[in-house]
Amino acid sequence: MAGALKFLADECCDAGLVSTLRGSGYDVTYITEQCAGTSDDDVLLRAYNEGRILLTEDKDFGELSYRLRKPSAGIVLIRMDVKEKHMKWPRLKDLIEKHAARLPGHFVIVHSDKFRFRPLIFSL
Image (cartoon, rainbow, N blue to C red; front, side, top):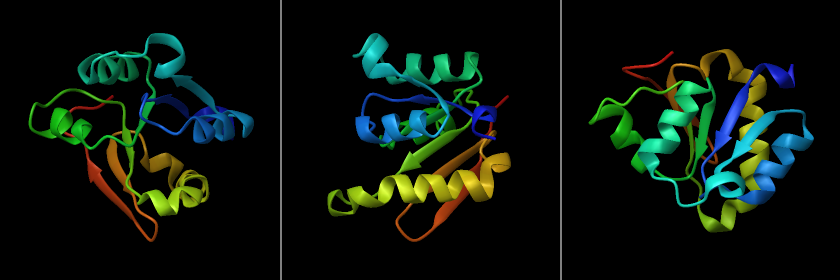
């Protein structure tokens, strides 16, 4: 069910992707709408405190999670070339439909042709 997963979209996320997620029934908080300019540390902490999967296109969250050992409920990093922008929603939708139960507690990298899962060190 769409309502089961909650997301916090980092401000670097495509607004169209956020809108499509919401239109599909997902609970999505978008940093750009509420507190643009928030530090990555605070974004990650907010997602963790609210039990939301962080949706981002910023690879710096990997460093926060692994090198600095910041807690996280889960992170989905979309890594696609600009010319693959049209693939973001189909790939995210495929990830959610096939692997929703694996998102909490994992750092997931979404590529145009594959998903990479890595367990988080500190998670919910």
